[in-house]
Image 1 (tube, rainbow, N blue to C red):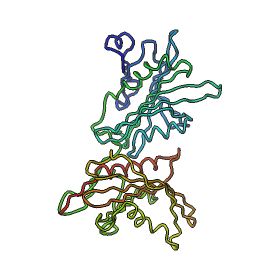
Image 2 (spheres, helix red, strand yellow; image 1 turned 120 degrees about the horizontal axis):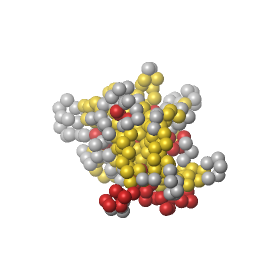
Image 3 (cartoon, helix red, strand yellow; image 1 turned 180 degrees about the vertical axis):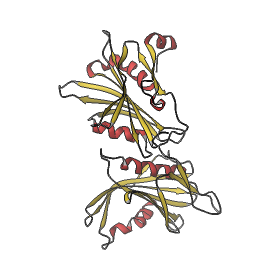
Image 4 (cartoon, one colour; image 1 turned 30 degrees about the vertical axis):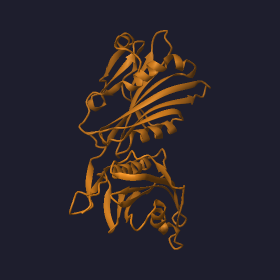
Length: 345
């Protein structure tokens, strides 16, 4: 931001939103002095699953902009950035640019996104979105918030600095003590040391073999996601490709009736866990069961930790606008990898 303190005091005012009885929805936001409240009572929009808690518009002859604040309560822990991406797709927004930020508290990835949308009239609107997340102490789960600052595309450059300033200068007034939708629980890998990892409370962990665990998201008897966690000796298997072939061999057995189609292994920067050594390998794909008429999303990571290969595989629903199981599965896999710790006996 390039505004100096004097310019900020001249151009902006601080709005305190308290137009709902529940303090967890109260927030503050810095608005341009030409922008005033137009609608402050909560209004639910079922088509997009959002409850509006503040609409602000330009009320003088200045270039016109609108500011919207909205939230959705979701039961499961996920990245606010993934939640926002789902919403943007649902609303028909085209992403022009985005900045993802991993919160140092471990509460996930947050987003600052610039979008464009063509309305039915043919007019183009540019919007900047930012997100927040907080635990819902009344109903459980998490409150996922967004701020949207918009203007006509042909005047965006004249308002870009103000739009950016508003989109990043807001916060909740009464945060809970937990920036998560669910508590995290510890999973131990050894009775002799602190080796282990963490998962959201709604996930269950089962030991299948000495080197394999299955982490499941089963709700009311229906499974919505499975994460396989397997460990292999780096002395026995020299490359990530060997580990991948070994771990996925079950998908190529003729009597299994399940087939995997996946992209080639690629390496990505290790911004996951400081204890990983060497490259981080990943790929995505799809699992198909012709017998059960099921197509599932597949994502995999292979990392090296303390001389062992760790193969982490997530299988579950594709992204859709009816639920957030895709986002919850992705977040659980990230939490496992980011908290994974191995101590040698």
